Amino acid sequence: MGFLDRSRTVAPPDWNRWLIPPAALSVHLSIGQAYAWSVFKTPLQEALGLSGTQSALPFQLAIVMLGLSAAFGGTLVEKNGPRWAMFVSLVCFSSGFLISALGASTGQFWLIVLGYGFVGGVGLGIGYISPVSTLIKWFPDRPGMATGIAIMGFGGGALIASPWSSEMLSAFGGDQSGIARSFLVHGVVYAAFMTLGVLLIRVPAEGWRPAGWEPAGAAAGKLITTANVSARNAIRTPQFWLLWVVLCFNVTAGIGILEKAAPMIVDFFADSATPVAAAAAAGFVALLSLANMAGRFVWSSTSDLVGRKNVYRVYLGVGALMYLLIVLAGTSSTTVFVAAAMIILSFYGGGFATIPAYLKDLFGTYQVGAIHGRLLTAWSTAGVLGPLIVNWIADGQKEAGKTGADLYTTSLFIMIGLLVVGFAANELVRPVAARFHEPAAERAGAEGVSK
Image (cartoon, rainbow, N blue to C red):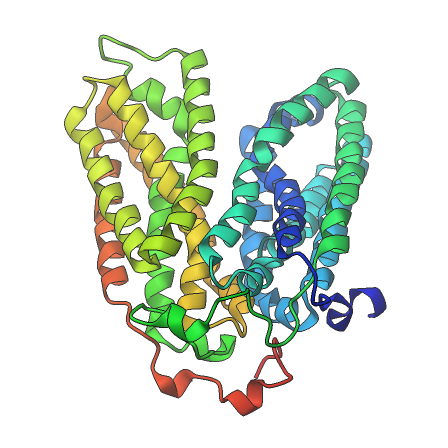
């Protein structure tokens, strides 16, 4: 593969490891545009005569493909290296916009679904996991902080993309031609930005360690292994499936609020003495986005100090208490509702950023990217489960004639129950049994190759 070959990315002894987080950020800030898809929904509906459900199809397919490509492509990412993976992500993600531009200009919505949803979605999945194992290998002393920096970029990508996309649509127009031009600019600019990551990314030389850091000392007295487990063996362990439940239920609890944030706060306080206006609801969405992004860095960095199991006790235990607080406070205080929701969303973001380091602790660095990819199927499941719970129950309550906070009380109690189950699953996590470990002799010289 020449320039993209893993062997061409081995860093020289004097390479600065702090160049790796910016390389990862160049990819994650780009693919984080997915969270800003809603900017294109109304223009597409008006230009192509689509319904709200139809205009959501490209985004929904993109998230499905994110999970599937991460799960099935994780081993290839480990085998071929981060530069290859970032390049594949660049090609797919940017090509998705170019195909979508063709679809918009010709009025063929199926091309937008194919481009942004299918092709671009593959770029999302490969790009999301591409830097994970590399960051962990460069920062074995601070894996939570390192992965938190990159995954924070995915959460914050929409803060850049949303106003930028809106400005382009204002400049080019919201008709078919204007949407096509906006997609075209997205594809070209993101390709250039992601190229920085392709050029900067490096993997450490075999046996490299940060100065003064010893793995044996780091693992002492903690739920951290110095052995390694292959992706194939990892999915045979109870630890993998316990973490699958932990991630799925933590994400379900957060995405249930995130997906319906603006209408939820308006509905919740509609019958109270302090109703929430639409403009204030938009501000609430912005606050949740900031909490989501900040939580990815703050909580994952904290996990380096207190341990991964302890920080998930906070996500799940305190998260359940925050939901209970919302129920108990009811419509008496919008401040309590907003503060509790922001804390829950910070745990949502923190859960995404901390899980790669938790996997590294349990399964080692050998194929952690591939294992992470398989675990992201929990995200795909939660992406359906969370909104389904909140919307289905709210719709049922409306049909029963209920209004205000009563629309969501049942959903909130369900989220509490899910977080309690997740908390119990986290408590059951133990070190991986030695029979799943890879023999050192087999690993030597074959890092990243599936067994």
